[in-house]
Every structure is written in structure tokens, then in C-alpha cells.
Amino acid sequence: MGNQSSKPAQPKYTPVRSIQDDDELLMKLQTKLGKQDSETEAPLSLTNLTKWETSLLSDPKNQLALNCFTGNNISDIIANTARINLDNQDLFNVNIEFQGGPITNQKSSGRCWLFASTNVFKEFIKSKYHLESFELSQNYLFFYDKLEKCNWFLNRIVDSADEDIDSRLVQFLMGLPENDGGQWDMVVNLVNTYGLVPKTVFTDSASSINSGALNSLVENKLREFALVLRKLSTSEKAADIDGAKEAMLRDIYNILALTLGIPPKPDDEIVWEYKDTFGNYHSVKTTPKGFYKDILKFDAASYFSLIHDPRNTEGLYTVDKLGNIEGGKPIEYVNTAVDNLKQAAIAMLKANHPVFFGCDVGKFGNTQLGLLDVDSWDYKLGFGVDVNLNKKHRLMTGSSQMTHAMVLVGVHIVDGKPVRWKVENSWGEYGSHKGYFVMSDRWFDEYVFQVVTSEKFTSAKLADLWKGKDFKVLPYYDPLGALA
Image (cartoon, rainbow, N blue to C red; front, top):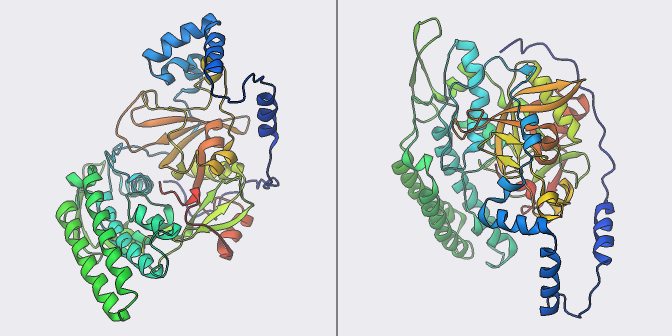
């Protein structure tokens, strides 16, 4: 994967702009709306409905738009074809040497964070052992993550037993006792505790590739257990509560084992067989922990998340009540300017290092074309209105959050600045780019929230913030607590 031992030149650090409530956009909108005349006391009146309909259809363009939109998908009608052809070029002047092989597929599950992290890891394995194709077992990590998250949930239920059951916290916990999603620091906890195995050692099951029924069963058992634990916590000894939790987790283990399969334990012997690009056969005996520490030799704990959250000042953040392994690494986010995320990503790609990142993939995305670009749709042309929320406002109002994790494997730089990015996804070989997205740099600005890096690839200032462990704690319901 190139020389990873030498420290690259420190990327230029971009200071965070003063983050205060910027109401300029809202003032403009308020001024515009204030100019409207109202002839009735009630905005929704039959008089206004008639007036609005007449005004709308008086423009022949709107009559055409009515026919188009009622019979077609909105995105297809407002697609900016000229921009799409320009921005969807699969040309990048910075690429990692090894990528793909295979394009992975999480199918009907929320395991993107496990796919993104193992897609990063697989490139180092492929490079080191001269492999054309290789995939790690996401199901192995999935099994142990679910088991650990169930334990995490039960402990939070005991911790909150003195809260009313209809309190915001308890209802938040009950609303989603566990799920498929996760974060980089949760990956760190898993690989440090359980290691990794090749997919040939522990393959997918029907419930790992379509996890809905499994999640429903586990979540409802956890809610049942929560009611029992809340009652025990008011009358029983700690030992009795621990005994009850052990019995509950045994039931969860049985459900997971029967649906996902029985995985090797972290110290069990496994055998990895492979053939390299020279045609040579190899057989390696190790353990899941040994595969991570001795074969991969990737120190996941030395990597941390840079995030761009314009609501908050620069600094180190964590999220209350968010985690997977009890006593493990907390969620750690260094909030900074978006340009610092880009500089870290570019430094990594130039060093032949794929980049784990988190984003809101559902916005301005065209899966068929494999394109992420805020200019590819023109709402103004179709409806006469723009969507005016900026990144800060979208976080404030719940319009946007981190919903998906993928991997950056290339970038196109013009005059020293990124223009577009190459993204490896985990949805199989879809679209024009066979499983990859082309992401415009403006889309990065608006919908990328996280880049995972190490101190080798970012400024000393940001690395020191991470190492200082002086956390600002976001509430458990904050949108930065969303799991990719």
C-alpha cells in the first residue's frame, strides 16, 4: 500500500470560523414571505385556494410541470442533465493502488459501517499478501456487535431505573434497543476485543443479509427484559440483577447463534487459505485476534474521527449513552472546519490509504448514475422554489444526519483543490460506475460529516485535541448520535 512508515507533510490547518447563529438566510426568507398579501384572516381558506390555483395554472410552464410531475419521479424531471454529464466523469488524478475486488454488498441490512471499515482493512491485506480479491467477514463482527449492544442496552436500563418509564431517556432507550448501525470507535472496540476473520471462515447468513426479522425479535425481547430489570432494580440485590442479565444475554446469544451462525471465539484457531497473484497456495493457522494483530497489523485505535458540525465550536466531542462494548472506547469526534476533513483525506489518498467516511447518502444521490452532486437537481426550475436550509440548519431541524459510511479511494485535484471524489460503496455493482459513486466537492461540503484519519495525516492541533480527551458531551438524542 505504499510506504506507511514515513510521516507525510502536515496538511495546512484551516481555522474554524466563528460559529454563531447566522440568520441572514432566514431573514431573507422572512422578508420574502412578508411581502405576500393576505385578503383573509385564515391563510387556508377557500378564497386563497381558488386564488392559488388560478395563479399556478396561469403560467403555461406550470401546466406542463403538472403533467410531468404527476406521471413521473420528481428527481427524473428536475435532473440537470448538463451538470450530470459534466460532474459524473470517472477520472481521478489521485487513486489508491488497490481498490475493489470484490465490490461488497450489505444487502438488506444496516451494516455499512462494518463494510466500510473492512473495505479499508481489505486493501492492506490485498497489498501485503498479493491478492486479486479478498473480503473480511462482516457477519463475524455483526454477531459480536449485536451481543455487546444488547448488554450495553440492559446496563443503560439498570442505570435509568429510577426514571419514569415515560421519561424522554427511557423512551429513547426503548425506541431502539439495538440496531445494525455503528461508528468507527465501535469498530475499534470490536477488533480489539474479537479480532477479525476472513469471510471464508464465517460467511453471511440469511439473517445477516436481511436483518429486519432478527432485529424485530431481539428488540422486543430486550424491551421485555427491560421491564423485568426495571422492577428488579427497585427491590433486588445487585447480584440478583446480574444473574438476571446473564440469563437474558444467554437467550440473546441463542437467538443470534441460531440465525447468524456460531462464530469462532476470539482465541479459537482458524485456518486461512488463499492463492496469491503469482499462483502460489498458502495456508495460515491463527486466531481471530491473531488475524487482526499479526496478519492485518492495522492499529485501528490510532485513528480518530474528524467531523464537520457547524452548530458547534472546534473541539473534542462525545455523545451521551452511545457505545457498544461496556468499558470500551467512547465515541470521539474532533469537530473542525470541513477543509480540514478534505486535507486529511487527500493526504491519506496520496499515501495510498483508503478513507472511511460518514455522510448523509440520501440527499441529492442518483444510484442509477452513481452520482452525488447538489447541482444535479434543479428544484427552482421545476417548482419555482429553492430548498434553502444550509448544513447547520439541517442539523438543527433534523433534516440531515450521518446515515451511511463508505470509503474514499480517489480524488481529482485541479489547481490544488479537490473537484470530485471517488467513493467505494457496499451496495453491490450497481449503476454506471459498477458500485462506485462519483461525489462532487460541493456535495462533500454539504453532506459529508466525518473523515477517519490518524495524526500522521492531519495537523498537530487537531491530533492534540483528540489526545487531550477534554470532551464536550452531546445529548443522547443529538443528530451526531446517529449511527451509520
